[in-house]
Length: 468
Image (cartoon, rainbow, N blue to C red; front, side, top):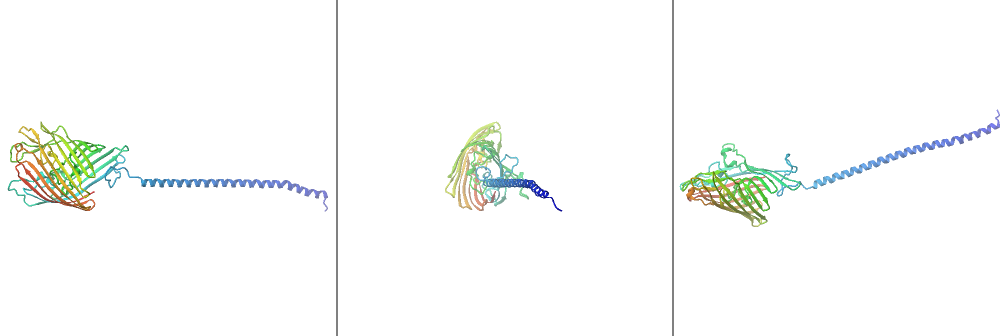
């Protein structure tokens, strides 16, 4: 079959026209898809980059936080402990008193002490269970006649002077200092009759020694008298040692301290020796709390590397019923260091009505001058001196002498009252471990009456003491 020439010519032309018309569209369609794909890829890349950036920021923040935590922990580790009261720091300073002010520190301390002694008295035995069987009390030394016989020596063991104390201390943000302290022992007032006996369980009563609160310069409560220099007491195995000549009183008071000065109003009490003119035996001695006014005490104290020096004065009112009198006394005391291994401790006291403050009340404060009950202050004086020597960090020794004297008038109170007493003590104390003391002490004491009768005491005293 033959084809028409014009038709053959038209087909290639149509094909060319078709290609010319379709090719650009196809090309355009392909370009649009690529662009859409590229756009999606670009969006994905942007989101990935955003995620990477966010992750890097988070990691950087975590690293910064960890660094800050490390700095805080380092600062806490290097931070100083909470402020504690001046002086020797306690073993534990953790706040454990939940009802106390924030920042209050609680302390506990004391010691356990065993005393064992053998006593020999020339004129009779000291009453069993009395204070004189526990430590040296010159007023308990028996004094008899020419034929008096003390019998065989006698032995006592006890742990009644073991003690403990509780203290709460607080310093405010403004620097105000507060302290509360309670201290107890098991002395029981020196009489076992009210607390127990030595038959089976040896039970003894708890005794209040101190209970006070202080804030800044003020103190209120029971503590050592402002008239007493506790820092001058010797290092004795006995409870006191130099009992004859030392001031020794604890009582309720209000005290103000400023620098080296301190002043206090203290609980008053009067001991009265009964009127008994030229009597062979002493009359009764009584105590009264009839006083209208408190005892007024003042003290000046200075200290340094050389030791310390202190002088105190006291004014007192005495009252028995409707009868009154007044008196005063002074006390000079201190410690003088003789190098690193030796020191001298001393006290000298004198005054009118010094009675109950010295030698555990060896003498009376006042005496009755007639049957009507008028009273007059009794003059007394006394003191002690002690030498302490340290042989080594574990071994030390002390030598002590103490004495007291009272100006009695036999025409008023008879011949049977105590005129004077004196004592010597020497000891050796060994500390095999920190806070543990093992000591031995020999002592001799004598009490003399106005008629020159005298009784002697000889004692060998040992102790084991652990402080905590």
